[in-house]
Length: 389
Image 1 (cartoon, one colour):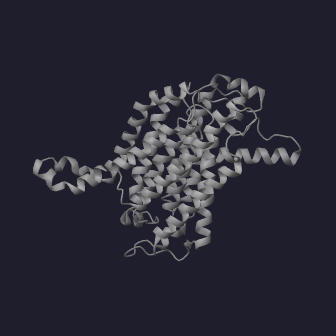
Image 2 (tube, rainbow, N blue to C red):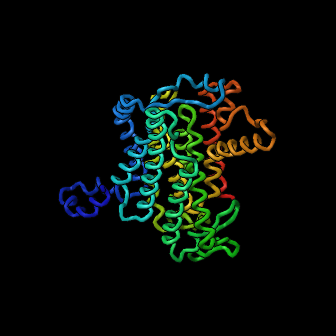
Image 3 (cartoon, rainbow, N blue to C red):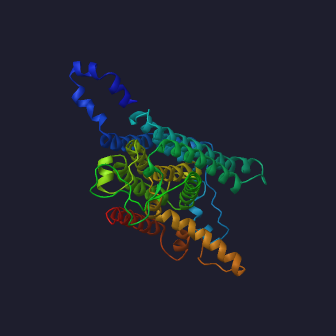
């Protein structure tokens, strides 16, 4: 909004002598970090009223893990308001609308992903926290296949959207592997390396759908301890912001031998808004948490993270940057598989894996901070891989 107002009134602002102050809005770096501040302030100032509103309506968590030992460890969290993800969604949407280029098609897709998965997550949370209480024995939220159907649905929409936006740019449909160059170095213009894998329509659509659904669920599973998911998402968002900064510029992309995606630079505003919203949410979600994001926040955060990675063709780096998320969901898959194959034996004390360490004697804040440290080091490792091509 501010960006477009500047474009439409630059002559008038110049007459007033304030154009030189406002022209920083043309700088994507300024708008990206301003979006982070805007989202942070949105969550910070609306946090208390929203938490109070949730408490009044008794929209609180009722943790039940089916393990007596873990239930005792998590008993203090009973009745803590959930659905706090509305703050995160609101912060992201507000910042993007205020500071983003609203003619950019990637921005449209980002907003669609946030709203779509936010509604799905909110619906799931509402069913869990209200319907089941009024009518004992009724359904406990959305069924797993229903949730997955909606996740794959937005994945399909995003894939078709991204395929169309790629146009004739093969780099925007390529599969970028570790240590692989996208462009031939020291060439005039952007010349693809002959061994670059360019995905066909079916492979491209399938990869986007799977990654969006998987990442959305992975962030949801990670949201189990105070501050764990928003802190790790903050780290991943900042790392992805740097990747968007490279991918959206032909000069920087060619220098880093990185896929250039026209229009992707504007996604820096989205990643900045994600980082700011998560930082603001940490104010209320740090131990002891005053509110939880629930599926309302975790599903759209994961889906948006994956969509941006797919847009800039960095799915493999996302697996590294978001390694904590994928470790969490992998631990659940391994636990369930081991339990079924061995007739009841468990690989971990409890899955997802953050509960394993919690039950092993680590204090909750130790688990959270150590997972943050792992997240930082994984993000650094992913950025190091940018130069190893």
